[in-house]
Length: 535
Image 1 (cartoon, helix red, strand yellow):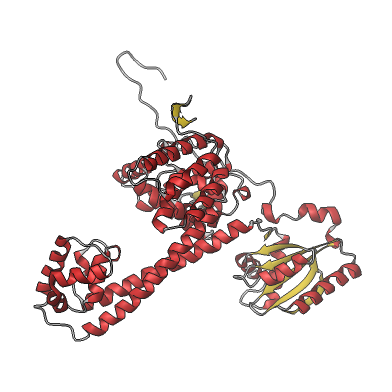
Image 2 (image 1 turned 45 degrees about the horizontal axis):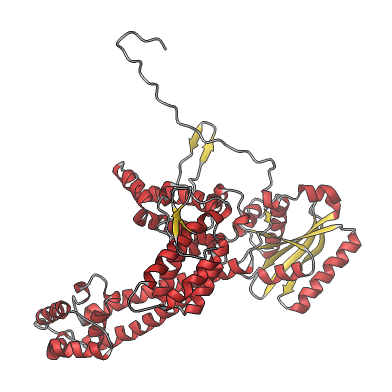
């Protein structure tokens, strides 16, 4: 573009960069493609066993790839004898009709599909899983308004032929156990949160305004102990500061004088109000609920130690090097992800979790930035977004990005999704890669060993269990990051050994961890990368 002297040519606005569309090589889904297997044996020699499971029994049938029914739909009781009989019928049909290969498809129905799936897999058959959504879509065109077990079986056959009978990824025992434990912990936390809401409601009717004296009543041991000991403001005034202090001393709870003064000042004002008739029964109710809450809290803490033991056996423990991610966050993500080998790239993570906008396109109409897709693994998506919340609060890099986005009037939900997308790329590189993370979010990366040590210190874990977990963690670390970890461990050990109180249990554990990291002395020297590492 020609320009005159003294006049600057206007910069043309860049056209929006369109995303490259990657067309699949086949119409069928990759994990459900059957074309190669059918081509090898022939459509007449390839059969499908379709199973529609329920809690106590299933409906099943057998048909070849072309849709010719070989075994009529019938009921299968979930008992070993009936499973053996069904397997025998399938083998007899194979011999009778000359079937060379049989594929068993089971519709996913909670956990009810597992008994028949495992029974046929144990008998040596290849098994696939069909999502109920796929069955429904293939049933509606053929049988609109008619939903029966038989029509579901026919639709399931069509779905499997179309490539919607998917092969499930294999999970090892550690990841399966971790998923069960992390989901159980989340359920207990939700129950504990519901109890806290109920406790606050009854406490407000028993001691109006008392909970507002503290930023967090349930982490303030003295405040909660006083509320449990006194069912009314008058009872607090009657005890006075000396009486309240004696009550706390009996429970070995330390308190400062300003806290007692604040409580007594509130009690003096609250005692002038008209007392609530049901204050005493309400007090009994919330104390009972608080007993349940404390029991849940103890169970959650013990469960978190078990979760940490599973986490250190997986490469997901490397995520703790990112500031803002702790033991529970990393375990939550690992439990929903499963083995990282099941993901080809970072986009596979966002694809499974549905962390991308839906799209509607027809002719010239193209709405490419719709809401998040509805059909996805919601548990994985929730785990990613919870980590995005943590990073937006606790990680300097992501907190800065979030503040810039807010200044630009970006929706808060979009901010979290963008951070979550960035995290999935980091997570794939950290867990599946063999190089340390080089990203602005972890320029000053945290020590994984130190985070584990502090975690177990808060949970009161036994020294033997702590040492076992730390030693299990070391093989999961990359060779390039062990020098950084050894430096942090040696520095902590030096601080422990210079204390006047003498050696502690921690000081007895850390040399063993250093030995696993390949360190024999505590002298440090700078390395070639600019950081310091022990000799």
